[in-house]
Length: 310
Image 1 (tube, one colour):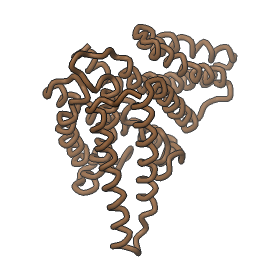
Image 2 (tube, rainbow, N blue to C red):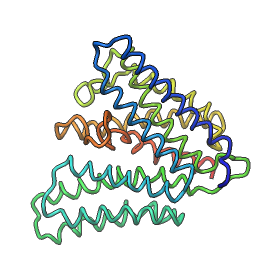
Image 3 (cartoon, rainbow, N blue to C red):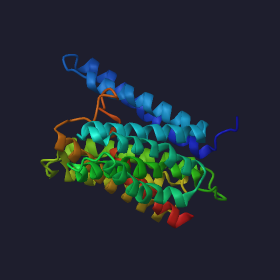
Image 4 (cartoon, rainbow, N blue to C red):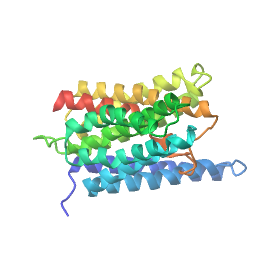
């Protein structure tokens, strides 16, 4: 097996270090406060160990495996969305078409066909889904069904699949981390930004941004995430071909639009009256609860890097 480039070992060590510290802190809290219930915290940390191990192992060992893993993430996210938002029985043919679009979209990614990747869902599926719906012969609810399926495809398949296409960007001389570094950079910063916004919001938060949609989101938490994620993006820029200034721009983009993605998916959940998208991940909720920020950050980061470096 070819040894991993040194830059790729750093995020592995960083994630492992964070999880070890978190696990130790959880154990210490249980000793110091035996009367308190830290069960949910323990579940969250255990789930992070599993998610981080699977993701890092697959991405670092096999590019094909990484594409398959990300296709499964897109499928699961779309499935959770369709389960949350009510539809009609007549929509089943269009829903099947939406699910079948996932392997086709990842076929374009796996073959590096950027032209089809970028138009398949926004153009071809945009035209095909309404046609599949009208074949049922039921016009009542047509507009709502078309909007639901289109939005789900654009957000949870098209948007998220941009992260996978980072793996197909060409190698660059002097860029040791390669395309895998770009994917690790995006996912690591996206998840760290979620944690940093949560921690700063918990400790310093006073002024709510969206009191109805996401009452725990505060300006202090949002700004704290941005101010901490941006310098981290510069420190980790060895995973990318970006200059320090460009990396700061990437950190700003990931933190700001990661927040937007989080709040938008929160609006969907509030609309249907649920707290979590599912119970698939113990302590975290569903897949959507874990990757909502990447739905917005991934396509913007992809085009930012592609424009500046490729």
